[in-house]
Amino acid sequence: MYTNTKTRGSSRAPNYSSRSNRPSGGNHGGASFGNRSTRPSSGGSRSGSGRPSFGGNRGGGGRNKRKSSYERIDVSRFISKSTVVEKEEIYLPTHTFGDFKIDTKLKLAIANKNYIYPSPIQDKSIPHALEGRDILGIADTGTGKTAAFLIPILNKILKDKNETAIIIAPTRELATQIEVEFNDFARGMRIFSVVCVGGMPITAQIRNLRRECNVVIGTPGRLLDLVKRGEINLSSTRSVVLDEADRMLDMGFINDITFLLEKTPDDRQGFFFSATLPKPIEKLIERFASDPVKVMVKTRETSKNVEQDVIRLARGEDKIDALCDLLSKENEFKKVLIFSEMKHSVEKLSNELVKRGFKSGSIHGDKRQNDRQRTLTKFRNNELNILVATDVAARGLDIPEVTHVINYEIPQTYDTYIHRIGRTGRASKKGVALTFVG
Ligand code: AMP
Image (cartoon, rainbow, N blue to C red; front, side, top):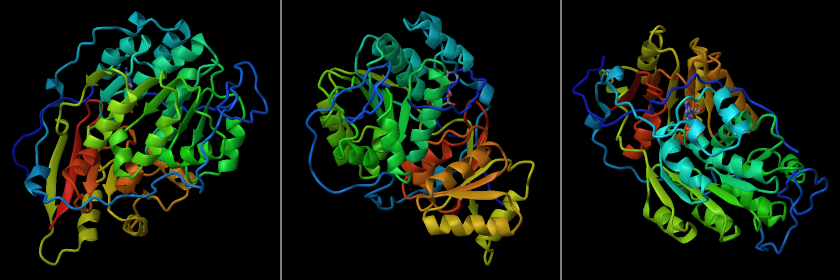
C-alpha cells in the first residue's frame, strides 16, 4: 500500500551495549527537602529558610500547553529506507566505568545494570561532572543522559549524606522513568528519592518529602506548588537537573523552571539537558549555568535505523480500516506506538481497536496517572501490543523494542515527527515509522 524511496538520515543510534533490565524499586525515607521535617534521620535534615509567597496553587503535568502552529510539512520527508544496522559507526568511549572516580558501590550498581561501556554523553560529561562542573548536554532520549546526571549526583550523596538534588522533567512519565533508574542505581545505599508530579495526590508527596530524602524528581507545576507551600526548600540544594529543557519550554513551563532555578543557590551544580537549544533555553542556561561543559551527542536528523514511509488512503477507503489492515500483520506489527493529536481522538481510536479485537491501550493527559502507568507497564510487558498516545503523554518515554511508530495524524511540526519516530529503531534495532497523509 505504501511505497519506499531512497535512503536519508545522517547518523547513529546509541551503540553502547545494554542487556537491559528495568526493575522498579521502592524509595523514601532522610536528608530532607521539607521544611517541617518530622523524621530527620541518618542523612540529617535541612532547615527551611524564607520562602516565596506568591499565591495560588498550580498543578503539575501539562499545564499552559502552548499549541504550536502547524508547519508546512513536506511529506516526502516522511519517506526513507533504513540502512543496514550493522554498518553503524561504533562510538569508542575514552573511558570505562572503572576509570571514573566514583564510589565502588556505584560501580557495582552500574555493573548490576549490565552497563558495560559509557554511552557518548556519559563518556564525555561524567568526568567533568565529577569535578563539579556544570554540564550542558545536547542530547535526546535514548542516549543514556539519565545516568549521565544520576551517577555524579549519587556519587556526591555517597560522599555526603546531606547532599540534595532536584531533578525537573517535563512529564510525569519521564519523572517516573528517572525514578526507576535512580532506584536501580541507589538500591541498598539508603539514598532516597521522592517523585512529585501532578495528577497524583499531593498529600502523599508531602508526607514523603518530610521523610528522609536526598533527591526530588518532579514536574515543574507540582514542584512549584510544593515550593510555594513551603514543603520543598531549595536554598541548600547542591545539584539541579533540567531534563528535556526544550520540551518544558514547549509545554509552557519556562516561568516555572526559571522560578525554581532562582530558588537554588548560585554555587550549586547544574545539569542542563535539551535535545535542541531554542533561544529562551539558551538564555536560561546562560543565566543559570556557570561556564558549563558543553557536550553534544545529537548529530542525527533521524535515526538510520528507522525506515520511514507514508500511507495514502485509496479513494473511499476508511482510515481505521486501513490501520487495522496494517495491524493485522501480526508478525510484523509486534509492538506499535500510534500517535494521534487530541486526547479524545486517542481514546476513541484505542477503544475502536479494542472493539475490533486488538490489544490496545491509550495514554493521554486526561487519564489518571495510575491508569497511564498501568497501561505503560502492560505495553512494556507485551500484555498490550498497541499503545495509542498523544505527543505530550509519550514524550521522553523509553520503551524498548517498539517495532512500529504510526502517525495516525500528521504531526504539527517536523521536530515532533522526529521525536515520535525516535521511539522506535532504538538500541541498534530496526524500526518502522508510517505516517498517514492526505
Ligand atoms: P536514557 O537516554 O537515559 O533514557 O537511556 C536510554 C536507555 O539506555 C535506558 O534504557 C538506559 O537504561 C540505557 N542505558 C543508559 N546508559 C547505558 C549504558 N552505558 N549501557 C547500556 N545501556 C545504557
